[in-house]
Amino acid sequence: MNPKGRETGYQPGFAVEEESVPADSPLAARMRPRSLDEFVGQAAAAGPGSMLRGAVERGNLPSFILWGPPGCGKTTLARLAAKQAKAEFIAISAVSSGVADLRKVMVDARARRTAGLRTVLFIDEIHRFNKAQQDVILPYVEDGTVTLIGATTENPSFEVVAPLLSRVRVVRLGSLGDDDLKLIVESALADAERGLGKLGIGIAPDALATLVEGANGDARAALTALDIAGESTQAAGDATIGVEGIKQALQDRRPYYDKQADFHYDTISAFIKTIRGSDPDGALYWLARMIEAGEDPLFIVRRLVLLAAEDIGLADPQALSVAVATQQAVHFIGMPEGFLPMAECCVYLATAPKSNSAAQGYMRAAEDAKRTSHLPVPLHLRNAATGLMKQFGYGQGYRYAHDQPDHYARGETYLPEMLGSPKYYVPGSLGYEATIADWMAKLRGGPKE
Image (cartoon, rainbow, N blue to C red; front, side, top):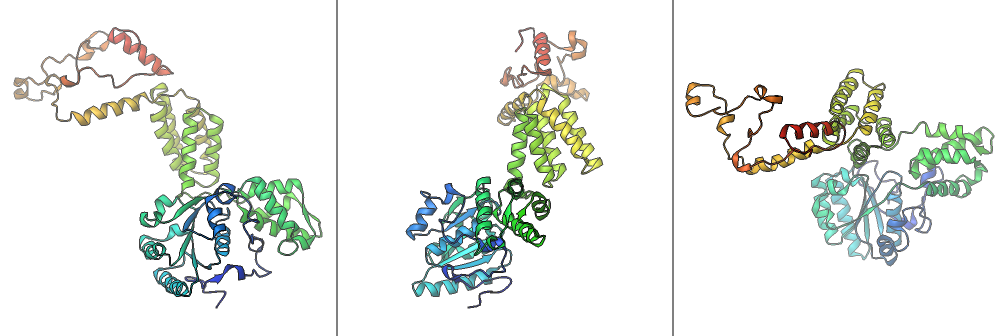
């Protein structure tokens, strides 16, 4: 067996319990948990009493997909599951493997199965496999030739083909909590066999807090930064890792954010809902999250323009003008200064009175429009462009609104007769819409709606 495999494509399998990690491996690799008891975090998904933990401990390992952010333990959990099941563990990357690699894996797995041995096929970044590649795996998962464990940062509902998704369990993992990261870091500092214990160094409480905050729930990032900071501290002859050492090791690490992934859509959803909920502080926070992570500023302002029309509407007609002006300003001045008009717009929209009455009115009108699209335009509303049209009654009886008191032709009808007098637009009571409601009540000669 070649333990290194090829740099790309199919990597030969190995029994997990026999795997050893070289002493010069990165700290994150050396500190990888050796059992489920050492696995930190993800209590809901893999802790005692969970579906996955129970299946693994019974040796009845199902095929499953681990869905979660980087550094949350997906690969580690896959290895531990294979080890507990006493299965051959074959790891391939969807980035570098093709159909030929998959077929080779399946031939070897079938031979092992004949010999009474189990195979766990671990596919990292399974969302990068196209439909044809996923289809190759399907029959072997279905007949039990391999137990599939996939790892992905993307929503499997969109990235994994339905036939394969129906044959696996999806296990949702979250970012690690602060306490989990602290435990992982402290264990690495204390472990003299695999960690930094032999260096005889510690970490200051404020440095530990900085490391945990900068890692953003990513254990791999935390251990990598700790490794760098620990070596630098020892080289300088110090006994304690300080804040500056951690900051240099993190190197202003940008938060995890993929503009094509779930996090992108989840964050913009939180942003919009926060503005709709009239919370300017929350709105500024989510705006900053997106900008600092490198989100396309024009994507953000497009959403602001939509929100101004959908959620503020006529409660403050100026909101749409502010949003459009923001789009123009950001397009004109670019980044990084573009955050200034975006922040102003964000606060303006969050603190504006809210109304969706125009949008709701349109939806009600659209329902009737679809149902009655066969109805002709009433004759008095048609344009009598020729003498013949006038002969047929086009425009006859139409009253010009500007010739009427208050520029309002009381009693005039503007809809097909069978629709009666529907009320599609019902003004709200906030902001400028209160003025609209008063004015429309005056024109119609009735009480305010």
